[in-house]
Amino acid sequence: MTAEIPLDGTGATEVLIVGAGPTGLTLACDLARRGVRAHLIEKSDHLFPGSRGKGLQPRTQEVFDDLGVIDEIRAGGAPFPPMQTWEGGERRGEWDLIDKAPGRTLSAYPRVWMIPQWRTQRILYERLLELGGSVEFETTLLNLEQTDDHVTVELAHPDGTSRTVTARYLVGADGGHSTVRHALGLRMTAADTRLRPSLVADVRIHGLDRDNWHVWPKAPGGPMLLCPLPGTEDFQFSAQFDIDRPHATHDVRTIIGSRSHLPASAVTHVRCASYYQPHAALAPRFKQGRVFLAGDAAHVHPPGGGQGLNTSVQDAYNLGWKLGQVLRHGADRRLLESYAAERLPVAAAVLKLSTRLYRVGRTPEVGSAHQAAHRGRMTNQLDVGYRESPLSREARRGTNLSALCAGDRAPDLPWPAGQECRANDGTPARRLFDLLRGPQFTLLAVAMDLPDAPRGVHAHQVDDSTVASVYGEGLFLVRPDGYVGLATHDPADVPAYLATVGLS
Image 1 (tube, helix red, strand yellow):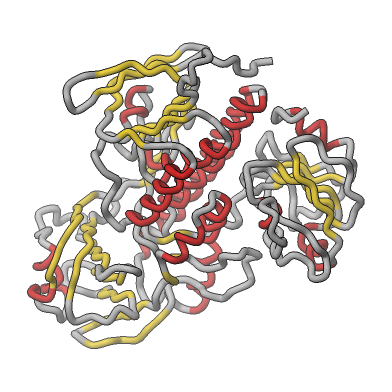
Image 2 (cartoon, rainbow, N blue to C red):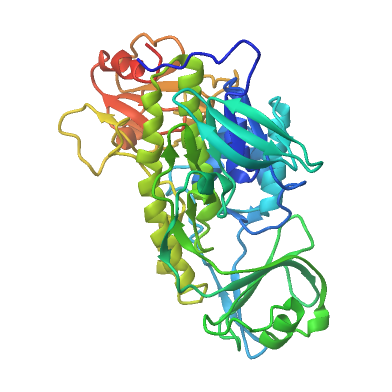
């Protein structure tokens, strides 16, 4: 066995998280609700102020539902508006970038949700405070050393002082220029180096309606977009440049005046403007000893299809419960090896997708009914799964691989009418996800008798033909991150599986 032994009885940090972006905040919230002593540091003196990662995919909304922030997320955002193409100073028609057909995704959140990144981070930060956590701002990691038992880091402060912190594990969630990744000596592999550079800013502008996402795909100098940000007076401005014209002007007002029918004077405020060269790059490994990489520290995406922030949140959600099982339930720490085994292939596949979508851009042709539906299915992340993971055990014989299998996301469905059941907070269950919400494992007995549930596992019997048609008949042990870990007909398989995650 390689279960963890507490460092001491002083309440020492168990997990040090570097970087208070969406990844670090999500992980900190998840660990806090599990009672894991995590400490989150951020080199800046504030949270990121821009809107860049503004699209939350359906799967990310499910994560935020589980973490207890979905009401704030929904209140602070809005559905994506229809695209409005401009050419020669005239409107050329509306079209949808992403399919909006409800219901088909077996999720309570079938549509992409638009909310500025700064607001998402603020909501997660406030949730972390509610859970008893905090962020130590203006704190920089200088170096790290690790042994078989712990990680020791030196942290620097603005007044010139430094201190040493020891933790069981360290997670680098500190972005594409990750100090943690560099300290490990890991170099990213570039997947594509010929992507058009971009300028992104939050602006206030007169002369445009806020009912559309406005796009000039054939503008002189390159495509330009202006998207109204919900709950604000701002638009997100973005413009691409020809890859062979690095000295083109980067002044937002000048670009808007030259690429659209709007005069430069229509722009009243410009803030958070940043010119950058998009990259598609992947770290060779996501774990080295007791140090993990997550989010942009592990994989850098071009802004195509809204995949970067969403993939990063999924990293944190995957890692959080595993650290919790090792540190709070005595699971063998080899469980942590499954983080990289599951997330690295996903990140590699998403990089290919986001790169292709960035190259295609946002044009009416992409927004055709067929393409919009196709883009929605590709990018919503509901089909991401771990069938090849060492944690996925499909024990039913003769299962059709096109059906739900171990390693797949557990689909959400309305709770069967006429069957009374209470969610974990005591309220009546309305959907299957009401039963999964929380940091625990959940056992669903679909069209089968419910066996005795082991301690620490919530169990529910579901007798409903609709659920059975989606899940199939059997016992489904759902992981804390909403994926089916075990699918079986034999109740004896359940305790055997649970023993591998510290719940014997």
